[in-house]
Amino acid sequence: MKIYDSIFRHSIYKFLCAFAALSVLLTPMISQSQQETPPAPSQPRPARFPSPVERTLPNGLRVVVIEKKDTPLAVAQLLIKNGGEVDPPALAGVAQMTASLVTQGTATLSAPQIAETIEALGGKLESGATWDASIVNVDVEASKLNQAMTILADVVRRPSFKDEEIERLRQQTLDGLSVALEQPGTLARLVAARVIFGDTPYGHALTGTPQSVARIKRDDIVRMHTNIYRPDNAVLVVGGGVRAEDVFRLTQNLFGDWKKPNETLSSTPVASMTNSASAVRSARVVVVDKPDAGQAAVVVARKGLRRSDKDFFRGIVANSVLGLGYSARLNQEVRIKRGLSYGAFSSLDARRDVGPFTASTQTKNESGAEVAALIVGELERLATSPVVEAELAPRKSALTGNFGRNLETTEGLVNFVARLALQGLSFDEINRYVGNVQAITGEDVRKFAGARLDAKAANVIVVGNASVFLSDLRKRFSNVEVIPASELDLNSANLRRASPNAAVK
Image (cartoon, rainbow, N blue to C red; front, side, top):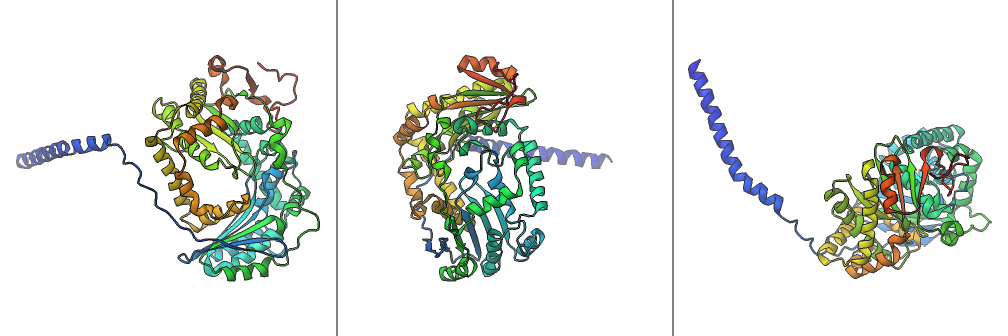
């Protein structure tokens, strides 16, 4: 036993010595790798994407095809040129419900039959609504596109809107809202939309509220479908391993007899909304007091720009510098330098009309006021201090890198082309995107921030336990409005339920 004990001890000793020696060798390498500055981004390489070709059917349906011969897949997306912005004021969420329900049964196929047919094709069928569009998308092998597009045409043109499917979706939506509206981050975003846009179309919740969803009837859904699902209000984009002539022929067979209504298509209500009285208000600081909130959600928000705006590329580069990604300024200041959040980011949501700009994060309740001031301060700094090339180049590379990754897939390419079609923009922008981003200078960013992201016009919304941060917030900002969460009304720009007890604290 002593011999074996000695051998064991000797083996352990040799192992420890070897481990110590390896540690000595690796330590400088680890230290060096931790201290190295990441390499500068390389020069962007030009990319050429296939040029879309298009035709318009006699009924007004615009058909766009992107031939991508190197892929066995195909994606077909039918885009209706209206979405949540056409919801009636009392029926927020009806466009979203309508879009979701079109795939849940037709005059000849039940929802399970549609699902089984698409599954048998190895495909994917999805539908939904954004602010400016309602979308039905099918993804399948190119060799099975005919069968898949037959289903696509059926669900778009002849949805059944069965009562049981409506009630199922209603309950799912209400269940989702009951959870989402307990989250400070969700509440802050919805309050921000009302503060920016008031009672105009972009002000309400895209998915609706518990009150509006409960009011939606089958007749409302049918009316929405009748009004906006029409060929002269639609774009069909097909991309992948397809031939354009084959797609045009198939589209004529499936959609050629889709009748265009005699009634003139009504204009989109968004067009005049940014000039309406309810949309023009001075900057506000709104606190939603939610005593049970474990964290405070902070959103700094204001109007941004249209997708068709000549300043679009200046805007997205400025947003990238400020808050797109881990190394952007907001995350550097709020998370990396101060450890006040897991992440702080900004978004410039360019829509058909002027969309929102938001900068947001979540933090502990105690630091809610500090973080709000930090975000406003970073907006001011972006407008007043130069952006040096060493900072600008990586932020532009982040944009062009994301662009390239998104367009690597057929679905991503079809999505991008469909959005250009929706906004009435040239398809040439696909191949000009990288150059347009690279052309933006630091001075362009500074001027854009000063003219279009002025911190003085920014609203501040904080949702959390106000007893912890309210005093500090009032020291930093004037005219702070406080709304108890129990009195919050997301159905109105006033944000308050009609109640004699709803006085400002």
